[in-house]
Image (tube, rainbow, N blue to C red):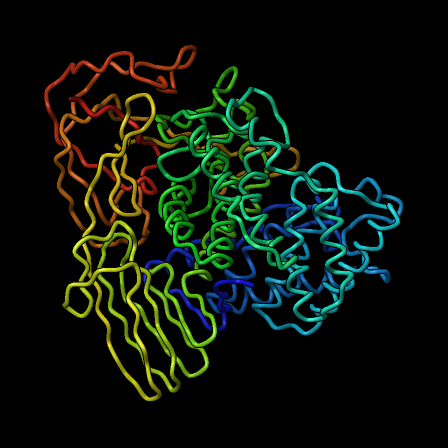
Amino acid sequence: MRAWDFYTSNELKPKGWLKRQLEIQADGLSGNLDKVWRDVRDSSWIGGNAEGWERVPYWLDGFVPLAYLLENEDMIARAKRYIDAIIARQEEDGWICPCSKEQREKYDTWAVQLITKVLTVYYECSRDERVPDVIYRILKNYYALLCDRTVHLFAWGKFRWFECFIAIDWAYERYKEEWLIDLAKILQQQGHDYLSSMPKWERPLNAWTYETHIVNICMALKYEALTASVFSEEYTDRAETMHNVLNTFNGTPVGTFTGDECLSGVSPIQGTELCGVVEQMYSYEMLYACTGDKKWVERLELLAFNALPATISDDMWTHQYVQMCNQIACRRFPGKAVFRTNGPEAHLFGLEPNYGCCTANFNQGWPKFALSVYMHRDHEILHAVPVPSELNTDGIHILCDTEYPFDNSFTYTIETEKEFVFRIRIPSFAKNVCVNDAPFQGDEAVFTFQPGDQKKISIAYNCDVCFETRPNQLATVRRGSLVFAVPISYEKEMREYVLHDVERKFPYCDYEFIPTSDWNYAYSSDKVDVENREMGEYPFSSTNPPIVIHAKVQKIDWGFEDGYNTVCAKVPASRDPIGEVEEIQLHPYGCAKLRMTEIPLLP
């Protein structure tokens, strides 16, 4: 049983900067992928001859909620065309993936697990009454094929088995048939046990393995929450055990784990795959809904406000495969990449740098985040992530006006026709909290409403700027859920070309970012000043961020990583100042596409 339940896109709408971020996504690559990328446009899922495995389901997983959250009729119609084509190709026995009966045995059924999850998302948005039967038949067929050993779990399906539990749980709530629980047991038995892999996470190697693959691991953080729900078992917080090991040996200041594309150790110059970011976000959303433990939603904010926007261009037409916390350039490596298992272009901004999974999958990040900001249970409503948003449900209307996380003031306008309890989460880092102009202490502000009530609620608090200690005697600057970095100015070098019949042309071409400003700094003082600014066209603008921090720095002899001239050294060659004290602006990590995030704080 979940601690909290999600609202649907019919009830919950983004406002303010969050709506603008979704509009940018709809106008960018996510909203046009079916027009410009053959793996979606010509997919075997809809009768074409291009990829027929994970890419269309990945894309729909974000495109569908994006369309419905924005109430974009064109996008809704395009999503329906894809769903219609997929449903029309479902075979009589329930099989739905685009492969022949003879190919099923060697077809990685990760795609079966993924498409069932996507169809639950589509149903929750559209209420298309065809979908429950379609999901039922897919799962029934999957169960039969696993029972008679026509198919078995291997490769990606073996390591992502728990993803199918989302649809199994959804179907069991409707049908109450025990074979669904038996299906879950088979998947668990054939699936990988992640606790057995944890020793391998402590010493990353330059080797590709499923056990250390960053996306598998980020997905797996939620596995116990899902199994506990399906099997009605006690939840023991194995996710925290996993998180502690991952963070200790592979953590970054923005809440991600290094993985380029397998776990890469504690280093600011190793990469983190974009698929890992959005899957880690989704795991935290599910973990919070299942457990109600506030640590997961605070960790979700850290990812959403920093790691996600940092690795996507302002206009959201291009993205990186991997981001680096200390990223002084995004230029193709002429030889061996600095990454453990990725290629030489994995950190470029483009259509499908390194590999196309992130091209399809990154677009789930913002829409699913937007669907997680309000949650409910019984007669209670929780504003879990207090971003600008509006809720209309069952005679209750709640409007939150704020620019959080860039500003920490909130105005709620609430009208109701029924009694309910409203809870507003107060972050652990909030200082001097005031609720309706009165001092407040606690991690939730709770209000009881009666039928006919019309009220306004105001909340405001402060956030300290802190210098957090990082490994290797480095430090990073944080204020609330925002991490700040030294921004590096750059010039763009555009590359248009065709590779494997895939065209890269403006605005979805590839870009190299060539630095044009200094980056070899250390903080000379922990005294800083915060400056709030007007928000511009892009909430996470790389040229006009809505908040900056003024900090004192001095240049040091940092140096380059051995063998590279576009990657800074993991640690500086010397921490002795070689220049006078300067005042510079720090930008939010999500705004700074080139940046130094972990640098020394001089004594």
